[in-house]
Length: 189
Image 1 (tube, rainbow, N blue to C red):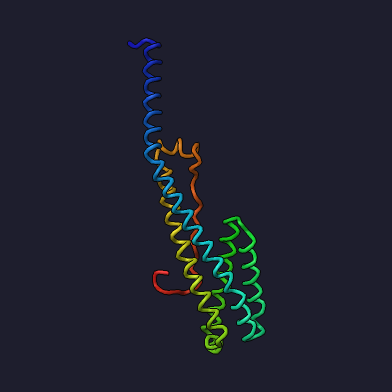
Image 2 (spheres, one colour):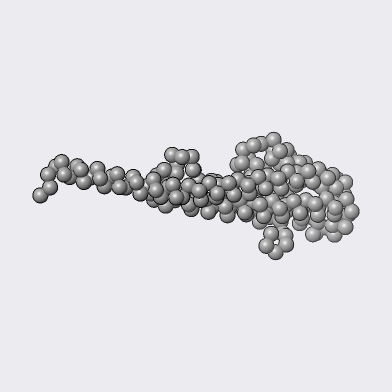
């Protein structure tokens, strides 16, 4: 039978061994966490650049829609309002929400262009629409890449016992922003 002091020594040794395993596993994982986090941040920066590029194209598209038929002024105004929200905000949640809102409005414009071939052939609309679609495809691609990297990073954070030290050293899960498909595009976009 073990004495109480032996039991305490054994428990302490077991605790120290566990802590050593936790520290070693975290130290070996830390470079991977840093790399995955940096990749996700780079993809997020690419997403923001694509949003900015589309934001530059939207005033011309809104004017082309208004210029084609005055009845679509409200839709153009809604797009510009969502654009201004995404330009002013630094909060990722707000930016993504305004991007999603713009995508819904652009989906309405796409349906309008498909149902009214005269709009689709209107030169001012066509040029701005193509530029807006290219930026939209870049947004979709960058968002997908960011979500993939964020998911990989989050998976690295999950395993026990590394997760015990990860939060202590500032490694917290990244938010993923799944995209809804509102505008048709090339395959794989």
